Amino acid sequence: MALRGDDIVGVRVDKSGKLIGLLKGESKSYARLTDTVIEKAAEALDRDRGRPGRHAVLFIATRLRETGKDADAALAAQLEAAVVAGFSSSAVGAVEQFLFALTGIDPNSLLSSHLTAASKKKRPRHAVGVQIADHADFIKLLFGGL
Image (cartoon, rainbow, N blue to C red; front, top):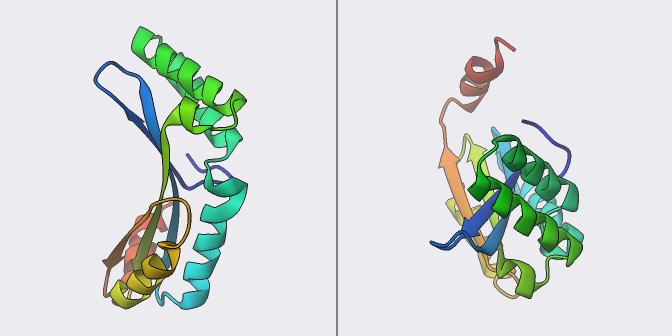
């Protein structure tokens, strides 16, 4: 479901169901990935002090509560508490970041350069790039019927 704000929010729990980490992610899809596109993604990841947006996390908590499962409700309560605590490390554990790029060109050098620069920042950042030679045709196929 499309939301304004974070493209990806991941939740990590331990075996007992305790919240131990969050992932804030940004995705980009361009036939020609550029430094400018990567910079826009980095700006989005750095927004909100590098943490997921409150509205996105509360949206997930609401969806979890709708399942009616006790374990999901417990995780929803932890996510809500994390929002109230301002995503402090005691409330969420580690917050990491993720950049996903879908492109028609080889993204390796751009993403490697980005990760090298990002390694100086406070939060761990990961990146995955997928090259699709016929990117434009792929996008038309994917969204053509919508």
